[in-house]
Image 1 (cartoon, helix red, strand yellow):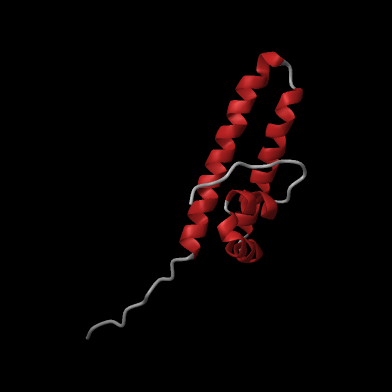
Image 2 (cartoon, rainbow, N blue to C red):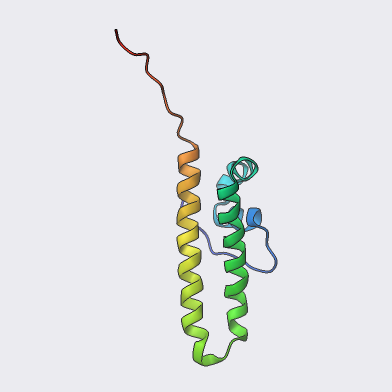
Length: 99
């Protein structure tokens, strides 16, 4: 399933990622506990969502450009988070060497 739209307003990284990928909430929580890089990505996602919400307060001359920048950042972070979740489901199978 693809990402959903991000709601803003003081969300944590967990909340932001879970809002985008609601079916993967338990997996997000587990990965947040063990992977610092994943935690940073989710926190960045929450911050980008908050910044996107604040764009409406900017002068009209820069509002559209900033909105596009934050939307692109959110899409990029969502793709990175989804990739990390997909990779977390992959368990390498070691083969016994043939002699």
